[in-house]
Length: 150
Length: 150
Image (tube, rainbow over all chains, first blue to last red; front, side, top):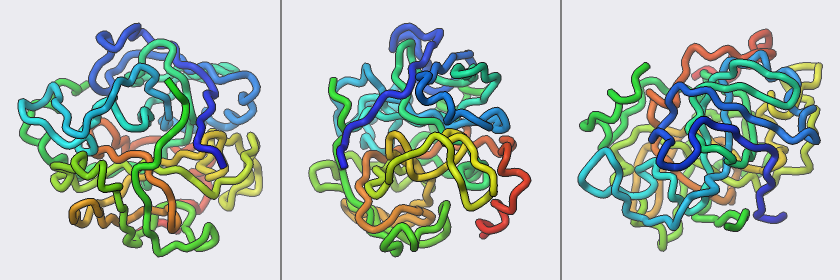
């Protein structure tokens, strides 16, 4: 079995460059266009209010194991950050599904930039995926959370 | 930029085969061994109670766009299921971090089988990742949730 990934679609985003994109999901609307050959896989997706979108961070640059973030003046280990510059440039975001039309999904809260390749879509299931009480380590002392409130 | 992934570590699991593994995370303890060359990236990870583990479903078989699941007698679109047989065999699980010792993380709730390659680790941040009120479509009529209660 190979270790290659296949692009199954593309993200159309209001964020045109990395500089435009928020550090984590805001509430902008994006469109996910799935290749026609995979459209049949979207059957019944409308029933889910939230989805996991897996995408390829195609503008990811060389990673470093020690990362400086906008949230702290001290560096942290790469795996203790959500830096987009990763060893494997893969992201998974939780988005709200607004509408599906054929092979196009309108979603809210995706922080990917225009032209980002899509790897997969899976339904979000809160009993498995939601851990509301999770502790957030070094981020808890920062004003990280304030900026992303609705 | 290539479209291939790198394995950064390996999962040691009590589940030895696909038949052993639960359909979604239960509460077994697993160990994630990160390659020594990437150990520095784990700095400060201890502060987070929950992590996203990205892994490669190395025993994933040929996908189909219409999927029969254990939860329903009707098929559903691949993207409306969490079938492990996917176009890109990538999974992302939320686990509880129990302990870190050097390049080894002891975690709870990982449904990967023994020998599964690791792609990435990111901190779980509830304000971004937890959507407790999400609707779950066709699964809501099934007894899907009962089996995974703690």
